[in-house]
Image (tube, rainbow, N blue to C red; front, side, top):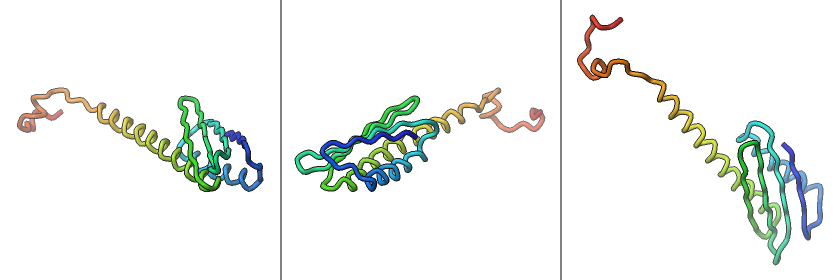
Length: 122
């Protein structure tokens, strides 16, 4: 995972870096493969904003949030991304299960719905 962080009108601190990397690591459980995260943090009208772009080989997600504290904002944005990724993973699993049920073949529909004949069993 490659994480890029940019700050506008904010002081860059090691604690913020660690917090962002820690929260970004939570997203790895939803995705296999190489992902890129681009964080943009800034202050506007006394509110702390955070925007995240998550790019992978076949997908792109974006989340933004704002609160009075940057630490809370980071939590809000990561929760939004987790919801998006969880929904994607759920759809993928559901589609996989649906396709698995299509492998069943009935060769003789009349025998399937008719009475059981012991002599017919091969």
